[in-house]
Each structure stands twice: as C-alpha cells, then as structure tokens.
Amino acid sequence: MKPATDRTITWDEEAGCLRFIEQTLLPERYEIVRTTEVERLATAIRRLEVRGAPALGVAGAYGVALSARSHAGTGYDEFMESVRRDAAMLNATRPTAVNLGWGIDRVLGALSGEETPEAAARRALEEARAIEEEDVRLCHAIGDHGAALLPDRCTVLTHCNAGALACVEWGTALGVVRSAVAMGKEIKVISCETRPLNQGSRLTAFELARDGIGVETITDSTAAYLMRKKVIDTVIVGADRITRDAVFNKIGTYMHAVCACHHDIPFYVAAPYSTLDLQRSEDDITVEERAREELAECGGRKLMPDGVRARNYAFDATPLDLVTAIITEQGAGKP
Image 1: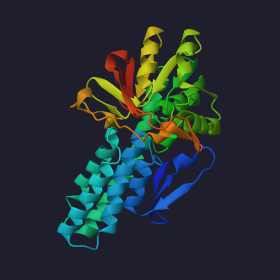
Image 2: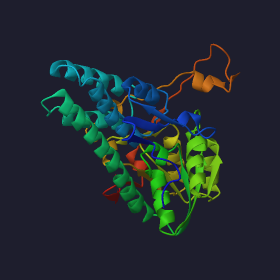
Image 3: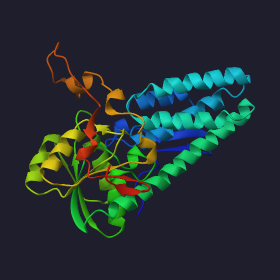
Image 4: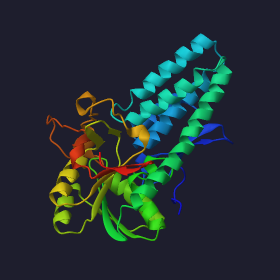
C-alpha cells in the first residue's frame, strides 16, 4: 500500500531544486512548490506550508543544503558564516518542534568536515537526501510496530495530522493505520478537526480519503462524548517533541489523553527517534503561540470582538503517565 499523494518534501534531481506540497491550500487545491531559496523555505515553514515534526526535520536538512549551494562560490570562512546564519534563521521559525533543529544540526555537522565550499555543498545535499530516505524507512517501521498493537477491527481517534503530509510519505500515527490496513485489519479513523487551522479536517481527512481508508471528521469537543459512547477503541497521535516527562503535540492532545485515561482507552504516541529530547523536561520547552488572527477571523469574517485578547497556543504537553505506549522505529513501550 502506498499513499495516494506525492512525497511531502523531496529533492527534484532533474530540476535541481527542492519540491514540497503547499499544505495551506489543501483540500481545495493541490499545488507543488519548487524552490532553490532558503528564504522561501523558511517562509513555508513559518506559514505551515510545510509542517509536521518529521517533515520539518527533512525541511531543516534541505534548508542547510540550499544555503550551502547558494553560497558555494564564496571563500570558506564566508561560506560557513553564511550557512550558519541561514541555519539559525531556519531554526527560529518554529520553537517547539525538535526535529527542525535536529535536521539542521545533522547537516551542519556533515558539511563541516569538508575542506572546500563546493565539497561541503555536495555533502550537505547528500546528507539531506539520506535524512529524507531515512524518514521513509523509520515511518514504515513505526507503522508495523504500531499496527501489531491494534485489534483486527477497531476505530482509531487521531488529532491534527500525523500522516504522509507530516512526514515524507507514510506517516507516524497514520502510518500505524496504513500498516494495519495493509495487514488486512479493518480500521476506521475519526479525525478531530483540530482548530483553529483544521489540520484534521483539511489534511488527515484529505489523505485518508485519497487512500480509500474510512474516515469521519468531528469537532474537537466531540471526542469525549464518543469515548463515553464506546465508539472509539484507541487513540493514536504523533508528537513534535518528547521530553523525559511529557509529549508535546498539537494543542488539544492533552485533553484527549485525559479523556482516554478516564474511559480506559489506550493512548498511543507514534514518533521517530529524532523527536526524542530526553535531556530536557517540560519546563525547559517554549510552547509556540501563534497569531490572534487565526482565532479572530475565518474566511474574511470576524469571529471575535476587537480588543479581546486571544491565547492561541500551537501545542500542549501531555504527561507521560497518561501515555499507554510510545511507538518508535525500534518498537513500542511504556514511557
């Protein structure tokens, strides 16, 4: 089974550029962006054209590669200074997801061993492409490990989008669903809309529908009621960072974890090793707050009175004692 979409982010060898799906346009329009400019990629990350922790790791890697290619004609010291400056700019676009900085640092480390800017630029692109291919392998492994935890027939609740669009092609939480379906299990998905940007209704429902996997969308506040009605058998979400005491994921995840615990429903987190940040705790992490306009306006219509402040957190933190198991490429285990 293969997802029905292109790779979310990939290197176009023929055109010599980075190519990614512009996710803010979905599901109304499906558009591919091609760029050789690190500034355009930074804008895409900031605007959520590219989003999802694993995809951000790949984006960060390719951002460094784009910078290295653009500055390869300069002297070595100037080259390194320019690439590090671009890397810092990229890293500042999203403060909570750990994968972005992980991908950036991994490529910076790879190119720093080369003696010329030209060799460093080649090495940076090689490493970024390796990270892209690694994400595909890891997500398939996560999917296989997670699928083994699911009964032959079940309904899965998921929040936000942790599917092909959040990775390179398979997904973490939705990778588990895809792998289970490929094994012949009967899986249905309930996708929370995930306000205020509706990544669940716009992206998760879009990719599952295209793959022919049964999906229904609900308002975020409906989930607890469906748990009480025994409609939901398990909850599977992705993660943007996992510290030694908490899982950081899209705002609303903590609410689902509390409700799942109350109703004795398994709550799984699916994520690759690059999302683990076990040297830090919850208190060390900056939770991104986004613009008031995301809550105050929709389709040109005002949804809040002028002068009313909005708290628009992009993420929340779920204590590990609410997590049944974390599913990684190495297997699934209790935190």
